Amino acid sequence: MPELNVEKLKQFLKVMVSNLKGLETEVLAQRAVLEVVRQMGVVADLDATLQASTEWAARQMNAKYDVLVEKALEEIDRRAFDENLVELLEGMKPGPAN
Image 1 (cartoon, rainbow, N blue to C red):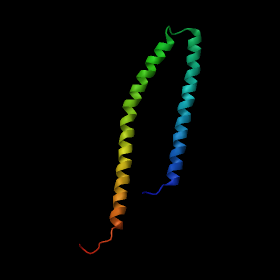
Image 2 (image 1 turned 30 degrees about the horizontal axis):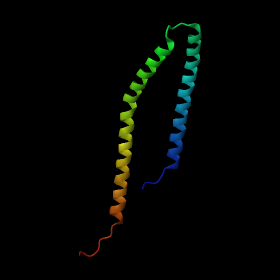
Image 3 (image 1 turned 120 degrees about the horizontal axis):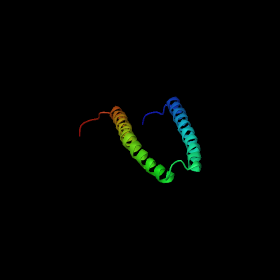
Image 4 (image 1 turned 90 degrees about the horizontal axis):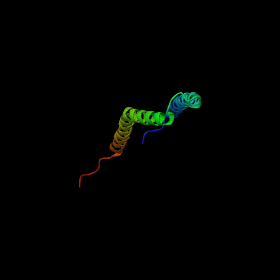
């Protein structure tokens, strides 16, 4: 099994948390503006419009990211298999033929 690169894992975690913080900040800001729009009655059926927009956005994000994640997971599995196979072959010791 490949060794865990702790520094790369730490860097990955920092990047992921930074991205999540940025996204959550943006969502909270937009929710605040949305609440003001709701209170002002600017959009006739705001909740239905928001629901439809959310469903559309979810489809777009699924199309964008699901294939990417699946390919990355397959590559991780392939590399783990390749490394395990190399370890197995390296550990084999030829013996007398039966």
